[in-house]
Image (cartoon, rainbow over all chains, first blue to last red; front, side):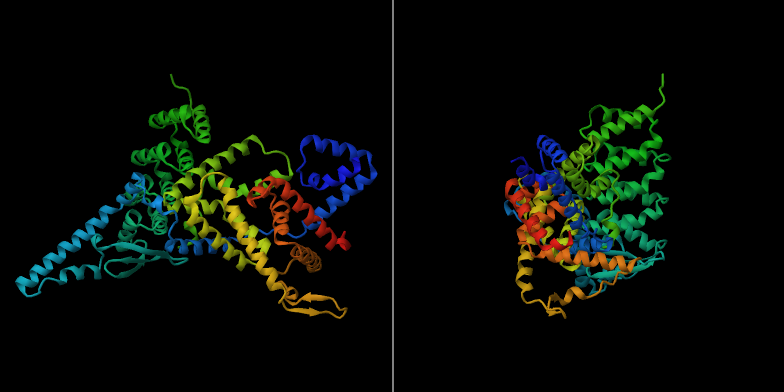
Length: 312
Length: 235
């Protein structure tokens, strides 16, 4: 009877699926019974044999290719649950409205210029319309850029290709030091609706973080970008300036306090390690250590505080 | 968009998520997870819940973040089941697109982890069923001893190892095991795959396959019996 029970349960034992008491009982029996001991040995051997068929990890190339293919498909896919889409959500509305000023300004300017053009045509016989098109040929005026389509860097050089839309899509090419390229990158980091493009531009801008204008944009991205990946990239680039620039420190502190993504908050906490003695940082750490809902952040803040030298 | 855009360095998140699938496996056959790991895992779950809620509001970035948490485990499973990177990629694509379209209907009745595995295993089961039908028309040849073999399986693997003889042995062994696995019914195969190769607990396997732990247990018994029969001469 006992042997039968053991044989029925040996597979579960091998897969560690037996409750503790049954497990103990089985072990006791196997220690005494030669037949069952042989059976267990054979089950283990067979288990090991099947594991000879390896489970391979997907290669990084495969993972990347799959992610890219998926992302392309997601761009054109609509989410289901229509009634949910229709519910008014102030959060989403605010996020969308954040990018609206640029668009509204662009539409307004195009409309305004169109109006002026039409007036000139009536009054002066069509003399002044060219003023709108000439600006798009050379250096792009920020107002004429509707959105950035894609950004890519040639491997091994600092040449950057940027495709951006005015009325039609245009392409700009040049080195990272080129003013026109910089201007487009700054614009892309702030205004683009595609998070992939924002992450690319922030990524390139990080190479030039010593420029104050670039830092401004990075701070903006850290504070307001909806994509945690973009925020993290900006945060990393700002890291070296936490010590020397109060504005950067404030932005990082704000990220640590309020960011919705725990990854971003943790990274911010690490960046602030070098300036933990600063009074504002200290105050924030104290608040986090007392009542932060995230247990990891709370514990880390406590550790940071314990490392501080005691004053007064 | 370049790969860098996906490879976001997460100080806590990334490390724990990357390892999560593997640790989940480890906990199946080894000691109970340590307190640190438990805390980390629950942190991951909280994070998932937030991300799922965001994704349900239509935030694509949040959904992409969720994809990153699970996609390596999905590829690993699909690759092992189909034996083909190409087919695994198709399953990956279908699974996450399906998840994206229906994430609004996710009601938190189970973990997101179980939910996504449910979608993937359903697609894999469909794939296995189709493959079984196709198999009847597969190119089969007969060797001098009269035994039939699959022509496609004789195509040499281009990856040369350091020890060709051992490689050959391993490949032959792997091939035999693979063929034995293919003889299982799709459901038996799936239960065995999830428990043996991917380390999911039988309770989770039951949840994923919309059945009870008891049924999963019985299916695992049947699958093991069949495999023992098919590989009897190798023991």
